[in-house]
Length: 612
View: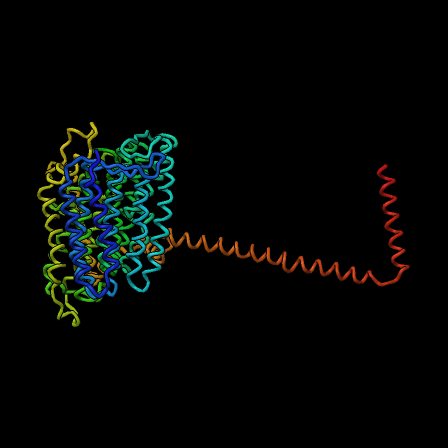
């Protein structure tokens, strides 16, 4: 039975986004009113739809390609979470972009992104999924491009990286639908063997890129500097994590059956572990508030990939729990960065300090979200990470060690960030700084509240939101909520966090400056070599691709010049040479002509005689 209400979470943001784009930039109030009204209505609709099972289908392109939408527990949860973030970020952005010259473009892209995300989540047809997925690529480019003077270059970088991975995903869709004989996602259940494994990898690339995993990540730190800050809190921190991990979970649990100890499971875990460590170590050395957070946005997705890649109950449920936890505290952290940027005028850490006294509510929200992402008990990040640790340890100590080491660097980098930005002496130019407006504080406070709630009452999200997603029989009978977790792992986590604190104290005392409290790691033997290369972007796949492309372009250029020289220079000279020789031979002397004619006739006669 068709439920037309499923169209509303898609159409309302899309239509309102188009309407906002048509409104004059001078009508700031009307633009913000339409945006907030659209996000409120979208939130109400998704709450009404939550816990419902519904389906909508209309003939579309033919050949089995229908406009099919499916609402069940997982998709209902994702669009509800996206709607919540959409409303909070719309409220926050209404103040943050108040002096922006083109608010209609930002809010139009904002609403269209929300509508397309809802469409991609609800899509029950692979072709329709690609339609919404590619729409998100276009608005991603637009939202970045309207930022700073260098934003267009960053937008192009993001577009190229994501477009290449989306092409891989399209190939995966074609192969998967061919093997399954259908485009309907809910009807696809393929074994991970042979060609289906290739289809899984291609689809996985699309999911990992959307989530912001390595090696498809390098546009995110650039966007943190060049794009409007609410974009970072809304897209890379929240929506892309929700959508990318949602799709990764669908292909791992529903469309294919990912099993422990399979090479694909190991591949996911390796990608997750590398993403955790490499990104968090880059976060540790950053000197800009937003750029530091951007590397953590990349690192944290590694935990989700690692958890799902384990293919064991604790790991998968932990990865899903970490998905929503990360969206909460990562958005909250970017909002605190926006508060600092809006009120202090900069996010360069060397220019900040002592802001806790001027921005007390922002500082409190930062503390809550920072200790949540660091995995400090009893906040939400602790419980999701412990589940991932448990699943990783079940699959191999090396994966657990990578995740635990990632927690050490996470805590160390946030100790550095909080100390440098909010504690110490305040600079003279920031002595008159005031707390952020209420419309900016409310979203931060709400997010901080949920970080506490989902920690103290972890059973609420785990039992009501996460566990119903895992309907397979091998997941039943498991209890994941509460402090029943492995006590040894919990003790190790506390020791790791204490070590991070001692490391920060040591670094601060050694350098006398919070900003340089991690310099002993940055400039450590061996690490300093790799850090120097990384800071020059020598490990950036995009930059490597540009260099390779430049080499091929240069080779193609010289081949082109060689062909031009062959036809335009060499051929002309050869023709000119023979023309000159012919001219010299034509003397006008009849005796000479007769001589050469007789010589030619003699050659012809000799040839004919020899042929006979």
